[in-house]
Length: 166
Ligand SMILES: [Fe+2]
Image 1 (tube, helix red, strand yellow):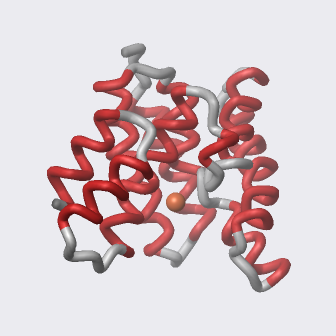
Image 2 (cartoon, rainbow, N blue to C red):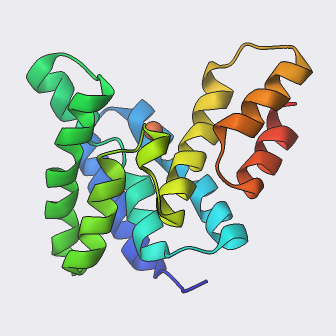
């Protein structure tokens, strides 16, 4: 895996914290997604210059869509996320191509069918590794197994999900 500089990662996390301010819940969510995304990068490969910023900023649109429309509906927040992310990534000299890949994933990160790249699949899986644990109340092992097999793209995410939630 190509290395991603620790100080750049820290700077992006600082930007996220600045952006969300007191909203610790969203900040912690993004950090947990980032942790899983980094694990998946290790097992699955993928470009860290796309995966890491996407994991960090994937939900920034929520804040704006809540302010503008009092709603966090996916189509609204998916539209609001890319401009903020682009502005931040430009400050850190990400290339136009990298920024456009990151924003493409952010703008579809709830819709499996639009996620065609490995990087998009990794961020989707990392987000669901967090969300599944937070949301599911299921107890039936067979049901959980079948949901996990359908939900996640990557085998590594399926393995992690089974070890955590089965
Ligand atoms: Fe998320």
